[in-house]
Amino acid sequence: MEFLGTTQLASYCGTKNSCLFPDLAPTSTTKDTYQSYYLPGYCHLSSWRPSLLHRVVSVPPGSNKQFNPTGRPPTVLPALRSALHARYSTRDWHQENMVQLKGSEASRCCAGRLNADSMRLIQDKDQLTYQMQEDSRRNLGERISSIDFWRSELTYELECLLKETQALETAKNRLECAVDEMQGPLKIALECLYHREKRKGIDLVHDDVEKNLMKEVDVFKDCQEILTKIAQKISQHIMRDAQHALEQDLSDKNSAHFIDEKCFNLRNTSDSISFYHGVEKADGSVSVPATWAKFSEHNIRCSQHARANSVKLREDAEVGLESTSEEMWNHFISTNLAFNNRIAEVADAKNKLQAQLAKILQEIFQTEDTILLLERSIKAKEYPLKVAQTRLEGRTRRPNVELCRDAPQFQLVTEVYTIDNTLQTLKQRLKEAHDTLQMLILNKSKLEHEISVKANSFFIDKKCMDMRKVFPSTPRLIGNT
Image (tube, rainbow, N blue to C red; front, side, top):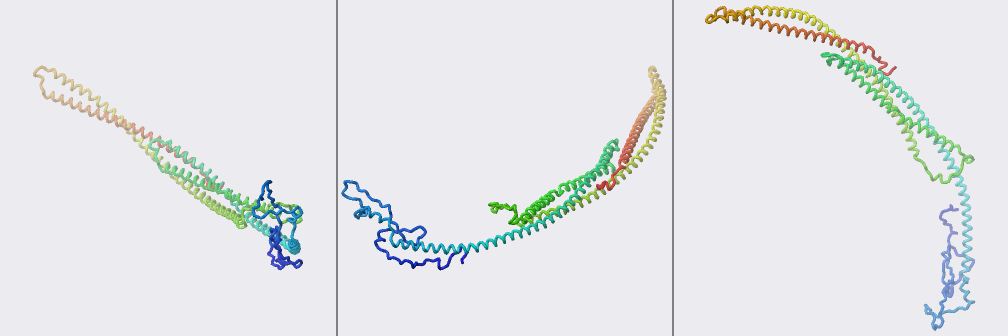
């Protein structure tokens, strides 16, 4: 028995001659009279059918000649003989019977073969259907196992990721608390700089205290910037994307597990089964098993990479907190030491200025006495000068030859010049004494101003030191409140 649809090679499928009727010899009359044609479906048989559409050419009346394209005289058949054109020959009758017998035998053999092939096809297809259904159920079971494996992996990784995220949030809060705690010392340092701007005169010096305060402000700002950048990195690195990918993948796995488990439990006797025509043609798959597993593995690897970066960020945050705290304490102590040195220097300078002021006051008193004596001396020289000048003026009225340049005349002239020079010298010295007194008074004023400046600077630095007595402890600087 051959399979249905295969090429039949049996001997009964070929052409064989029938032994029921003998072949008739063809007659020349039949062959010449009728034209043969092939019946549809039986191309190997030679059959004939006369044309019933014989066209009779009508001859117009009054014509002596008939139209004959072949040159033969027209054949006029009687009405009874025209029916011969619808008859078959005996040969055609025998051939038709032979064809009917062969077709019937072939149909019977084909039907028997079809029935046998159909029974075997039914058994094969039943077995194939059962095997395919079992394979599908087994594949669904394996798929459910694979989904369970990746669900457990994703759940474990998600738990680790959530713990690391919580630790990262704690580190971020510590950084923010440390930045807030630095605001107090920074404000104090800035206030110290602002207060020291109230110093006067030469005390507005760019001393070590101001240098340390400015450096301290820069250090505080740098530390705040460093910790703020680390906090921003942590905020940007908060593993929302990885967490969302894991949660989404886990949610998809749960949905797929529910659907596949429902499909796995379906049986031929289930109530929820139905026909969905054309569903096998609409393939909405977006992945293959390799890419499906690679997708979950990629999500887990991304989460692990994010956790590793998170651990590094937390370590950087811890190192940053410790280093900034230590650096701020060092600068705080250095600035306080500079303040103490500066206060001692200002106090010493103030004491020296006060001692110098006392000496200046004493010198002013002596200079004032000297000026008083010089004024008295100048006033005492005016009368001798008047006397000498009066004598000279009186002698100028001597008559004629008595105007002699005698010794008294020379002596009086010399006396006038000498007294005049003395007065000029005393007046010059008096002027110098007045200038010296003014200089001493100016120095006294400067010393008093400098003493007030030093007192102001001393007061400001002491006030700054009182402000700097409050400084956050190391635990607060590293965010452990």
